[in-house]
Image (tube, rainbow, N blue to C red; front, side, top):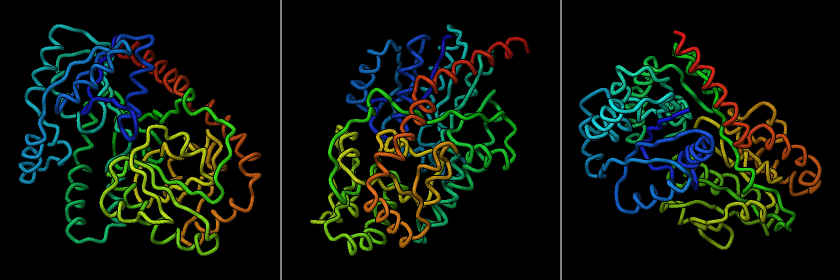
Length: 399
């Protein structure tokens, strides 16, 4: 297949967040298909990242979009109904680039990555390519949950405004042949709100070559939380655990330590750094941080989709405790291996249970590793995705 991917950011380096998923999709698709990416770049460093992607037999073209231009776009959106995150990535140059490409090239599939790129569907007016969009998460569901926990009146007002805009804007998927999200919860939410486009699941996968279990000795009572820290759900989770849950754990286990691992921690997270709480910032080998820990925690209070941090922990055999919110988007086959705490007290109890039962790591999670490997290895995920696309292309041509 010849596939064009339109994405708002260069999917490299693939450390965390949305870049991680799209990088793995690109890397795996390019092994047996012709893949081209059209995306934005901000500076010379971005262009270096684009060059790195070319090593995976991928063609890539970039459009310059400065941060100043994006901020002006978002400011101007205040006087319209356009979501701020969509306006941020608005570009006449991108629209013209796509028009030019489609006038000279044919693609079997055009894959729009994230709701922010949906605005460029109008550049394909006369194209008979299969048009798909991958939201990853139902953004309106994420914002709805965010509103439920945000207390600051000003931020709540801004979030409410964006929620209303996104809720209406998501109907743009009616212009696509298929919509993809990464969990059944997100799929059900979008269908219930009236989305008529066929909604499919494209799971978050796991790099089984990198996340290969190793037998190393973990540190007793070491607790880890990982994530891209500027992402609001992660930022909130780190503060919530540090302030509301960890003191209860530390009272019972005075030698316990909490490690917050992730790039660009905000100032409030950095201020947590102490003899009991370690804020590492970016680490290159996240796998070793998991393996050195006795427990991984995902105290997420709002969000959507499937959490990579939970999947990564399970495939490495590291017990994980989550909030009910964090486990909702998980495949049903994996939920029985995850410990859930629905309050600070219950969350602390679950951590204590794991501390007192080391057999969880050696017995219960052995099976979990195999389930994650078979169900969510990228080869499996992309294999299923490619088969779906080939069938849809055949149907599309017939119609």
